[in-house]
Each structure stands twice: as structure tokens, then as C-alpha cells.
Length: 155
Image (cartoon, rainbow, N blue to C red):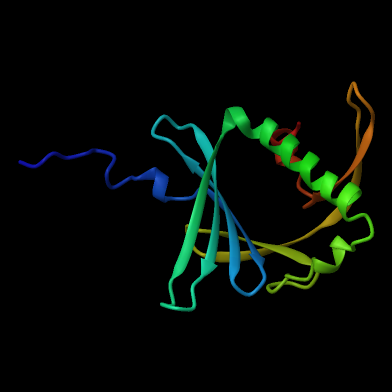
């Protein structure tokens, strides 16, 4: 008898619990997926998928982000983006590129991989003041009018 893995049919790393897709131009798409481990722990995979025109395939780059690094990652990403927006390109209109709402006008589409159904959420900008020991700063946070997961993303 061959070796049987009890969890082989229930391979959780290949199945997303939650998925968010961001189209970036004609060739690139980013996927943010929440996956679970065998021990019912959770991590995020961030995948960049670029269409190849030579063989009609896709080139994929994947990054794994674990729960103990969520806050550090979000803080570093926000700080880096803020630096580019305020120090390097203060006159650039970054909001002019918020036009990728293919499924709904003015909304943000997300999909669940289990049934491939699409839903659209209206977003509103919320100004939030974050007070740190160094100096206060103001950050614009997108809200989907759903406060159920607000504590999951605190920095």
C-alpha cells in the first residue's frame, strides 16, 4: 500500500480562504490571498502575475507574509509609499489611477475562490490620525463600511 496522507485531499495551502485581486495595467495582476496551515493558523500570500506574450503563459512571483510580521509589513509599506508620495513625487496625482473598477462603478471588486462569485463594495475615504511618539501623521484609509475586521489591521 502506498503512503497515504490524510490531509492530501484537503490541501489547505492550495485553497484560499479570502482573495483580493488588483489589476495593474494590461499585463500585471496582484493577488492577496489568505491561506491556512495544517494547524489552523493563517498567512497571506502576495502574488504578482505578469502575462507573457511569447508563449501566452504567465510569470508569477509569490511572497509569503506570516502573522507575526503583519504589523511590521504594513508599517514599512505605508512609510515607504508615504515617502514616495510626499518627498519624491508631491505633485503627482496618484488618485488619477483609481480607475480599475471593471465590475462596478466606483466600487472595489473582490472574489471568493470557492465559487468564483464577484461582489462589489462601495468605498469611502476615511481620515484617520495616527499618533506616534515621534510626530503625528494623517493617513487616508479605505473603508468598505464593514467594521467587523477593523481590529485585524491595526498597526
